[in-house]
Image 1 (cartoon, rainbow, N blue to C red):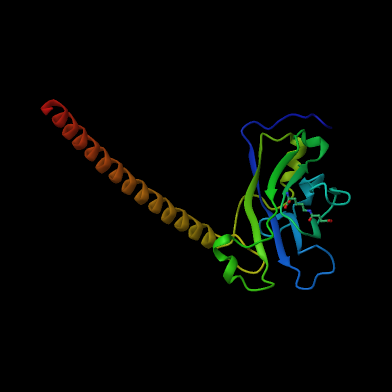
Image 2 (tube, rainbow, N blue to C red):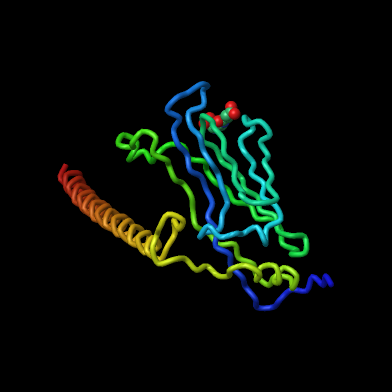
Amino acid sequence: MKTGKRMKGVVISKPIMYGNVATELLTRKTDHTHKWTVFLRGANGQDISYFIHKVEFKLHETFVNNNRTFKSPPFEVSETGWGEFEIITKIHFPPASGEKPISLYHMLKLYPPDSLGQSWPKGKPVNNFFYDELIFSEPTEEFYEILTKGANGPEIPLKTSGNHAFSVESEAAECKRLETAVGQVTGKHDEYKGRVRAAENEIALLRRDIAALESST
Ligand code: SLL
């Protein structure tokens, strides 16, 4: 029986990975420069279709049939094209869930980061995908049944490997990178504060000199 009753205090999280990979086309027949795939998957490559009703990818209007809908996996679009643009991925859940669709906004990236542009090997794929979690707070009883059919929780493996782009190890490396960046920003901030203070002191001294000159004339 469909009650639509929600389960108080229950929160279920489903780890996902979404984004795109792109590779430069080395032989070109048109103005298309890259082939790319935008996708929504389980973070560990696991099945997520049992709690998803459909996935819509909204591409730039320069693409033929720019709204692509999938009711079964793989939830992905592979295309060739010439430009970067924002892709909206709208995830719909089964009607019994009572959940509103979730939209993810992803900037399709074709080119390597500017800092690496020069040294990027020809034909090497550009990866631009992310780990995230779909959080269901107080799901309906019907949806809870569905959600708990598959693997639960945001478990990720200890180490990164072929099928597992995200791991405890990659998370720790990302934290380290962020810490280093925060350290660099704090350092720069302190340096500029020091320079502002020195400039202010100099202004005060100059003002004093001006006042002394003015009062002696
Ligand atoms: C840009 N603002 O100018 C962006 C738009 C659109 C990319 C990029 C179409 C491919 C086709 C295509 O790649 N559009 O003709 O099917 O960079």
